[in-house]
Image (cartoon, rainbow, N blue to C red; front, side, top):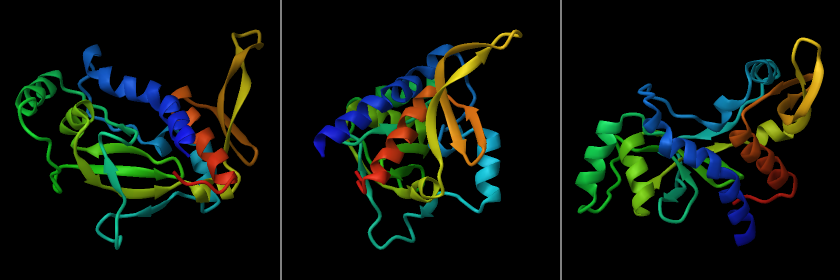
Length: 202
C-alpha cells in the first residue's frame, strides 16, 4: 500500500509544484484547482446529463470525518498573493501551525487519498511547507464517475490546420465524448480509476 501512496504522490508532484509556485508568476487571481474542475466542459456536461457526479460528504455531516495530515498526506494548495504568503511564512516560522475551523477547508478525494485546500490557501500552503498540522476534511468520492464509465485516455491530438497528428495527450472520456485535459489532474484521475477498478482506497 505504501508503494501505491508513493505512486500517487509522484503523480501529484506537477500539481503541487504548480500550486506552490503560481504566485511567483504574478497571477493574483484567487483560485483553488479542484480535481473535478479539470474535467473539460463537454465531458462534465455529459456526466451531469447522465446524473453522474462525485459523492460529497461535508465534514460537519460525517460521524468521523477523514483527517488530513499536512506532514504525511498528499495535500495541494494554490496560494495566489505573494505579500500575504510572505507575511504568513514569517509569522508561522516561529509558531506552531494550527487548524482554524472557519478558515481551513480541504477536500479529500477517494480513492486517491489526495487532498486540496479550497479555503485558507495561503496558511494551508504554509502548513504544507512546514509539514505540520491536521485538518478534518470534506470527503469527495470519485467512484460514481468511474462506475458510470468516466476514464482518462492518452490519445494522439490533432495539430495545425492540416490536421496532422501530434503526440499523445490526456483526454477525459465519457460515453462518446472525449476532450483533452491538463496532464497534472489527468494523471491523478487516471490513477483513481485504476485504484477504483481494483477496489483500493488510499
